[in-house]
Length: 77
Image (cartoon, rainbow, N blue to C red):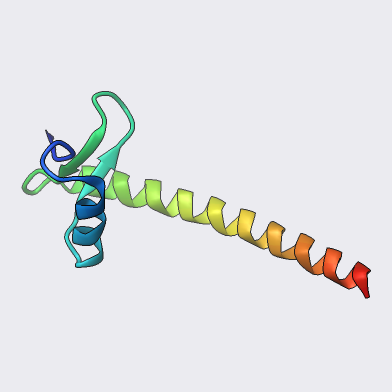
C-alpha cells in the first residue's frame, strides 16, 4: 500500500475519483489515500464494504432528518 495523499491535494483526489479513478482510503494508521496494489482484490473489497456501510448510515440519517422536517412542517399548518 503506497500512500497517495502526499502526492495530490484533497481536491485533486476528489476530482480524480469523480473522473473514475479508484483511489482507496483508510483511517487505520498510517492511513491516507492510496492506489490499490496490483491484483489485490481483498483491499478493494474492504474499501467497497466500508463505503457501502457509510452510505447506508448516511441514508438512514438522511431519512430521519427528512421525517423530522416533514413532521415539523406539518405541525406549522
